[in-house]
Length: 393
Image (tube, rainbow, N blue to C red):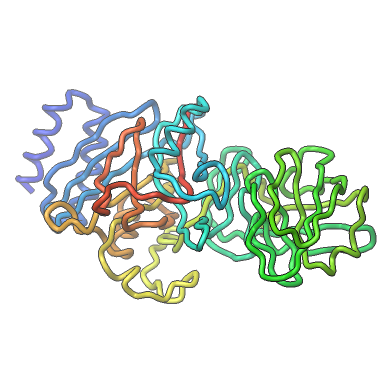
């Protein structure tokens, strides 16, 4: 205890700032419950409502990069970005996406990598919504981070739902901005620019929205040209597209008016921003410790080995959001964390909800366009599919 007291007093003398002192002190004792001998805790204010900490634990060693965001600050907005602006157009580094968003004058304060990704044309796995518009919709119930239109933060299981009313028929949409499978139906908007790879005969109807689509409400579309099993097709900005098996060609006719409803289940939510990961680490204040088969997980090494990690946690009681990046796979610097350790750390911070994002070489934290952590790949920062960011209004 005397050693801990002496360390705390030395920090206070260096800071000359009571508010920062108490933030360091609380972080120090959280860290001290995880490792008996913390080496250093450094805290700095990024902007009003956002504070960055670098915590080094000798027991490991483990290096944690931490952002604490005051959710009551009205000048802060939670949002995201997609690699190269469109799905299927390759990957980008977290820092590159931040720089591009700043060129749009979006005033990005900080960002971390987000969802898992893969495939021949690698794209993130889960649903995503930006500025109240779907980027991707999948009929798969996963834990997603969501900020609603009123600015409230949620962490819950959500999935995409969509229906298309065509004359006297109802088509169920199987996804949004995903490839069309046999006898299925997908909707495409501005985030998709090229025809998806197809295995069966498909038709694409070009649709002109008659008003701005709103998630959860029906929107009317004027049906335009039909493309039957095209060899190639570049989607035109300003139009939407409906892709379905060739049998669907008989249902829709050119110049028809059709109604489409895109929504999130469960109903009753009005998402402004949504992004995914897996698995959930804390739910309703209870830390999750068993991960086998949770949200499709099967590889024990994923949760039981120490890796670089990225996560987001919410402390509803004190109105804070935490963005965490743990460095790993670098024995002399930082060995990383198991998922249970990551959940334990977030719980000690006060989080009552927490979600794991993609980790390993993908883990990256950017603050004011500076890379704060040390990615584990030998070539440095890895290209990823999407990011989670905080920006100023």
